[in-house]
Length: 317
Figure 1 (tube, rainbow, N blue to C red):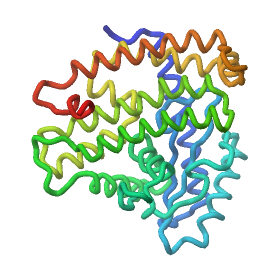
Figure 2: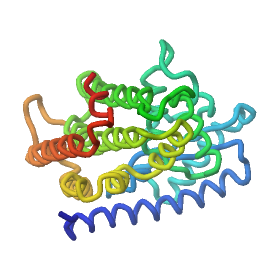
Figure 3: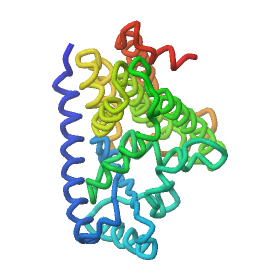
């Protein structure tokens, strides 16, 4: 099976928009930041995943060295304003990256009482879908240093990076729980959040699992290097890279999700808050496709790794 022309067209359009946007954002960031290597600018979300549709905004983040603390907020504010002037849609204030962060805050000790939902979200987004906008060498170095924390110096070649896998699982469960909280407590529109959870967030989770599974059989340095290369690849392309034709069924359905988000009528319907117990027709159709997507990923997971690879067992026990 190969991807249909329709699905290829969806991915190509989304990727083209993403690359055009990234190119422009890098130009603007270079203008605002100059030659100041104390700063790193990155982006998460649909631009980083190469999945830009008509309603996509820019999930920007700014990292800085401690000696740049006085200038950090001013630079981020100026950068956001310039991007808005260029026509980019910026998210509302208040997200996990709404304020600039020191690089050390992302590479702090993992786990423990102080490792909040906010910290794990920042960390996982950088690892699993982050893309550089300014200062690529330091961006790549920050991701590499973070991976080195996850891969113990004593790890054996016949082991996978279980520490990282457990944190990816923890992140996935965290965003599932946070979905319920935001809908029930904050009154956020349910349908569009649930559809995104069951498609883009699930793909991000799954592509992270595949990357960890690829560390089996490698020595420690090679594990870190392999993860660094794989996690720099957008999730749907990583799926193709690692699973080949076996990924086509899942990606065919995923393309239908992207096409739906690119349809303003469907997106508006999903973004409308409805009374309890009511569902839009658009949501009902996409929910059925989400079930197809989930089952195709499950089948892929069950057939992708050989019996010696412990990844699937590690997800269960």
